[in-house]
Structures are given as C-alpha cells and as structure tokens.
Length: 319
Ligand code: GDP
Ligand code: CA
Image (cartoon, rainbow, N blue to C red; front, top):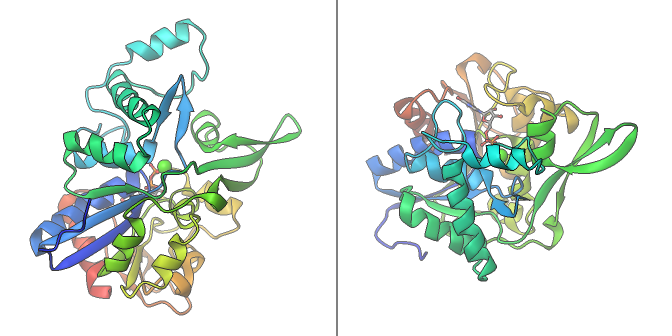
C-alpha cells in the first residue's frame, strides 16, 4: 500500500457510493492520460451488518464500478445478479427483508466477514477484495473503525435513531427526521494510508457525492477534515446538485434536514472556504457564488467516461 515513487501527480478523491464511483471512472481516465496516481477515500457511514454479513455499500459500489462488475442500470450491486438467497431469507421471515442482497454480492460479504473475523482491518480486507477487481485506483475506507450514520427520526410519535440504510432503503427518507449522527465518529481514526495520501497529494477532489451522508461522515473522522483543510494541495469540490436538483438519489431530503438549500451554491457554502479552494458547478448554475471560493461552471453530467474525465480536467485547471 506504499505510495508509488514513479508518479508525477497524486490525486486524492473523497467519495461516496454511486456518485463517487461514476466520478472515479472519469478520474481514472484522466489519471491514465497524465500518469497520475489516484487514491479514493471512501465513506464507511453506510456500512451495516445484516443476516450475519458485513456490508459496505459505498466501498462495494466503487469497487464493482471501477472493476467493471457493477450493474449499470441499478447503479449498485453486481451485473447479472440473481436473488436466490434473498428469496430463501424471506421464506424464513428473516429480517430485514427490505435490503437488496444479491447472490454474487453475498460472496463479497462472506469473504469480507471471514477476514474481519480473522482480525484483518477493513482497509486490508478492501485491498484483498481489490486483488480480484483491479479498480486501477487505490481504495481506502475513511476509517477501519466503526462509524455508522444514523438518522434521528420520529416513528409512531416516538423518537429513535435508525441506521441510515433503514432510513434510506426501507423508508425512502420519508420520516420526520431531526438530524443525522455519525455513531462512533469521535473515537474513529483515519484508516492507514489516509493521512499519508492527503499529505502527499497534489490535489484533493471532493466527488459530487451526497454532502450530508457521504462526504460529511468522511470528514467527521477526527483529523481527517483538518488534513484536507490544511493540506498544501488545492482542494476542489464538484457540485452534486445541478439546477437545484440532486440528479439521482435524495440529496435534497438530506440537505433540507441539515438546513442547507438544495443548490450548487448552497452545497459549496456548506463546505465553505475553510475546505475549498475551488468549486465546480454545472453550466446551468453559471453565476452561482460561494463566498470566499472561486467558482467555475462546466457541464457536470456524468453520462459517460469521456464527459466525466472532462469534468476532472476542469477541476484540475481550477486547482
Ligand atoms: P451513494 O453513496 O450511492 O448515494 O452515492 P454518492 O453519495 O457518491 O453520490 C450520490 C450523489 O451523486 C447524488 O446525491 C447526486 O447529487 C450526485 N450525482 C449523481 N449523478 C450525478 C451526475 O451525473 N452529475 C453530478 N454533478 N452529480 C451527480
Ligand atoms: Ca452511500
């Protein structure tokens, strides 16, 4: 996992799942052109245990997508997936029934669980899984420690905290929600390699991932936000919001819970000048302003590898 010495440029990307994965496809294409090394620091806040399996949705979305094994339509999970085990679990009435666990995907969780039980940290497990997928990007979990995003909600007049996956997948975010908490964050440490990668970075990119439940839990790991903010490398963020809409997913719901306007400027201001040296917005949002941060407008639709690589090039120019 040592940093290679034969590269001219090192790019570090903070990323969530599907948006992060799509973005990283473009970063990898750009990096191949210019001979750069890419390290992705991936959100672990969505990780959950179900049916005795340890599931890491964002790491897996990135790994499958970069490894060419993701289902392109669904955006998560494996292409050519089958659902035999899910059906069998349902026949037992085993909860939770609302989470999509494919047969191929389960193999990943079994390998991960075996290694975790044997005492390997998540970062080492991820590296081992990537031996198969060869993502072409170094994948690091933000932390090896348990850090889970929970939503504080009201169910039947009672306040309780539920795991983010339950909030997102089971309830579609459709519950009165007071706030999100990153359980375990205060005692979590950055995974091995994360701080070194940030210290050696020539540029740090914030993927157009969900700012509230993908990027914020990464930055919630003590020391990580400071490492990004104080890095000698310029930090450029890419807006996940285009024309006031979250493109795909429910970032709008998450933003309203934390009281942030669902606009490119709103998200840029949420990160703010402490973190950002540049903010990329879509051409639709030309004229958006973020106090203290240079803003540039270019097309931000990640429709294919070329379009996404062009976004990355623009981000590098802004850096
Ligand atoms: P998740 O963890 O699977 O939810 O994925 P991420 O948090 O990494 O990314 C989800 C976010 O990506 C969504 O909230 C969207 O705002 C954003 N997104 C998805 N597609 C696009 C796109 O084509 N362009 C831009 N700029 N943002 C996108
Ligand atoms: Ca996620």
